Length: 605
Image (cartoon, rainbow, N blue to C red; front, top):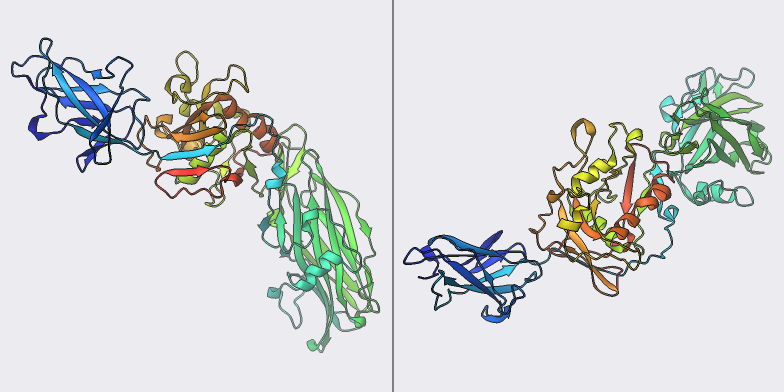
């Protein structure tokens, strides 16, 4: 009887293994050890497996206890001669990144092998993830999500033609000029246009006005050039409104042009819980040609859906008349309130502004503009209380790292490392909101997405209680009775969730099972030190996956989103079905995901 390998093969370590330089490379700590049994009498036999750590030269060094028995060995089942006998090493006996050696000895039910087989070396794969974290702080205050919302640039307003469209004399309609009839008494044709202008002169005018600093409806507009929005605020500008008088003789321009211009700054402030919102415009004179005598402006703020949006009265601080003898005398600031009627569950409203200028020596000329990027959406879907947003603004959701560091680390890892980068602004891969079934187009319950990635056991318990990593750590000191649960990323309440079916349902990254996701777990190594690890019982991530599944404390998991997301973000910013948003991780900016093992200490030491 013997237990020598047949056909020159070494003892094998598996199940996922390859041999490199006579060392089996193993992809899981719960490995299967194998060897072939040979018996000269063709009796059935079993094998005893013994495992040792190795020294720097690969020589056996210290025995590893494979079970809690006196000898710390594993014994296979009886198998026929010529067959492979195998044992599976339980969790916790072998460590990632360590090289081991094992050998076997046979027993046929009557005789024991007098010699051990040759040694076979195998190495458990290195960890793919090791993120070091602090303890969760149950008393960490809620995050101020507003502090993470940066202005989003939008295109400058488009000028719209204003009837009557009289061809410019000495100018071009392509240059934006909108002109009126030539004044028969003075032979002057009036024209106007809107010109984007971010010059220092205009910047200064819109900050200081003609005297005291301008009042700002939106405080972050001060000193900001061009057009930007946030979810409830808009700064539209900077640009200049030009009104000119082209002197004409015999139907041709003489070359003399009378110029007047104003720096224009426009601001809009919406309300999360009101159908009424406010618009403000500041007009700062830059020049008024004395030959124009004076220029009067008529400003009209319009909400372009009059059957569903009413305009309140205009209120002006400063006259809308400027004299050529004192052209820089004052600034005019006007305000108006618009109110959405709420006739529908949701409406989009376009705001348009028209300025008509006229002078005693020239007829009126008008220009109208509209900032398409600042379109307003009002709804009674996200809440029964109406409110309005700049729906083209993509807000940023930031998880509360101090409170739930492990959940944040998991989301960051999956967003940063996987090719679909769910919610990443840097990769232009927004998350798309999936509200409750009654509020989304396919009628999909987000819990069904969760059931794909984190299915419940037959007894109704969490997947993680039976299949999650046994070292995942609950926090009963924070929440009595806390258990381990399953966390997924991308979020179940998103079209990015891997549990969301594709096709007409609209899922972006569908999988059949959470087993196809990157597998991790959160564990406390000692008080004050937590780690997010990849699950070493499974094959290493390929990083071609489209989702993540992690075993972690139920309190950490549920607290990381729960009411914090619904009331502090999706409700706060009135997200509707398929609205995009970013997910940001400011604490992880120093972390590197390009190495073979994703390692980081957060917060940065």
